[in-house]
Image (cartoon, rainbow, N blue to C red; front, side):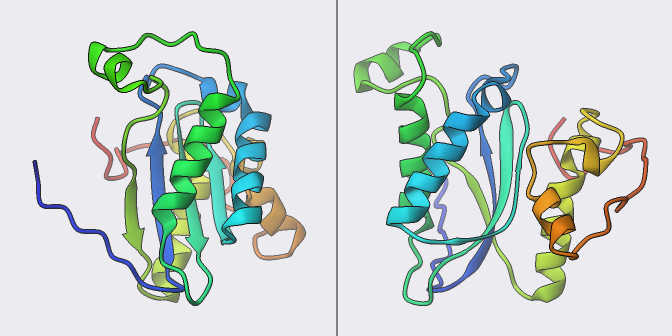
Length: 177
């Protein structure tokens, strides 16, 4: 097992990728209201600011900033994932290991995080969130994807409604293919 170390910076800002175990699933968009409720419930107990959030059928990306005295993003993801899992019917296939541990077979066990270093890094990761549905060929325009904080940012005047225009995705954007 790798010696993986997370960066814990009180009040820090992070970019996250969180995946479903079944990458062929569309559970996140099918159950978007359950995911929203789990996120809101968690934010009420463990506050954080959302810089960006985009939910795709089988994974999501987020940019969060934690309160100045707090660096525990893991508890927030654990609560979101567990509340979401408890709120939907048990119909997924379980491995023997997950069954023995009493786990659900919904989420990959971990998540990927990147500590945002500066404003330019923040902007790149917010834009990555927003272009992601286009990259995955779910829509041709960012504004056409409904499960994104892009719409909040358009209303606030942060992004124009036609940001990124109509595009044809190309390349693998740094993800494994």
